[in-house]
Length: 289
Length: 251
Ligand SMILES: Nc1ncnc2c1ncn2[C@@H]1O[C@H](COP(=O)(O)OP(=O)(O)OP(=O)(O)O)[C@@H](O)[C@H]1O
Ligand SMILES: [Mg+2]
Image 1 (cartoon, rainbow over the protein chains, first blue to last red):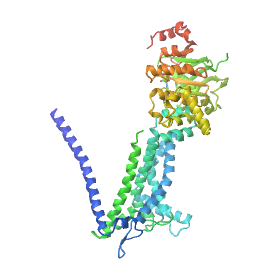
Image 2 (cartoon, rainbow over the protein chains, first blue to last red):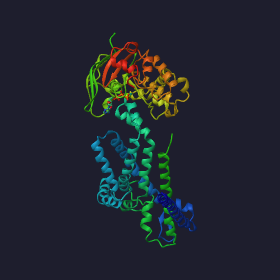
Image 3 (cartoon, rainbow over the protein chains, first blue to last red):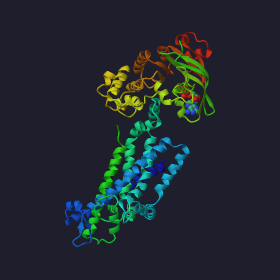
Image 4 (tube, chains in turn yellow, blue):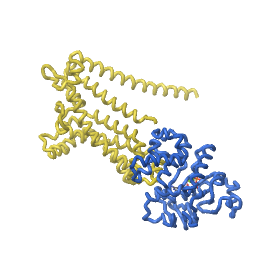
């Protein structure tokens, strides 16, 4: 009896410790990021950093305008959203509402497999297949473009979007569908007039989480977007994202230099964007009517 | 008088389980017919053949004829959209859509291709008036339908049906989730609706059947044991099993 109670107590404490530790770690990481990132503003003004149009960290004097990187990330993400949202939501509707049981299993397994492909592998495949296609189809000097990145990232967002949106559709009460069909609605009408609105908050959350994955993705993007830190005029030019910049330059930045602090500041920008996306997703997921 | 609905030798199987056995009956126009019987005897199944909702379930087979206005709705080439427009259904648990009150009511008409705003508004008003909700809700048409009380929801579901101008209303235990007061209000509504619609109601509640219906059918284990005028069924049942049931010997 006493032993059991003691065991309970110890387990409880350990779990508590784990919870607290994870919060402490997150807090420490955040503090570190903040401390290193904000140090940049001893060198340049926040406005100059955020709205500066050129990123030449090793020229003399260094130009550390993050705008091209933000726009690079946004255009790649936007492209990925345009591709992955309709396909992902469509696929979720098909799996949840239309597909016969067998097809459903096959599709779900396929989606899980897609999620399991490491991003570097996807990036590599994209580099040897997608990049030449984009180059040839649009007659470009190089296929390493924002578009290539968008297509690749759409593949990474899709599993998240499909599985969460499918869950959302699946948890819509059957009685809604019955009600719609009993009123003479066709299957398609019942889906888009009742099921989709009923699942809308879950679907929006799915989209946000999918895009959260996209914006934080590094490896594949670095491999196929061309990495040119210029403000993109279209989706068919090379761009450089926030993530790729940090990954590519952290190794060569001298610790304590302006460049070094600037990369941390880029990290803060990325953090803020991801955080905003996740919070939005959370709001949708927990929205109560 | 020719019957509105005529059932001839109806049989239905869920896989290998036969849920309806050789059913024959005739339902008259603009009357309320109650279907009573113990749990699991096939009442809901029977109701759901009239609008062919059973077909959503895998492995259902039906044999026999159901003539509605002399047309066999079990024919393979029956247009389900047309059928369900004509034969509406109210479910046991009120199931308004998670949309606004207004959108709930105009759902049917919109689905059937009506887009004229003025007409839709007319229909919304008429439907809500028919279920005596207009005065309560006319200023709340944009409110979320799921915020209504249970009784209001069930009325709204009936209004939603009326909006598609059906002929026949099927009600599967429409009051089983309502309290007695709300129940008596919905029953009153049914009596009122009888002037315009043919109503078939499934109920567990024998008092309710006795109170609202003109005709009653008693089912047991998939068979229609007895069918006739409600007062006859309740005062001088012909079959011993009917008598046992209405005197409460079946639980
Ligand atoms: N989808 C199904 N698959 C297999 N059997 C079913 C299915 N639905 C109903 N049944 C069976 O058919 C019989 C009749 O069911 P039904 O729902 O019509 O009964 P009911 O009279 O409406 O009962 P209750 O009063 O409990 O609502 C029951 O024995 C039930 O187990
Ligand atoms: Mg039932």
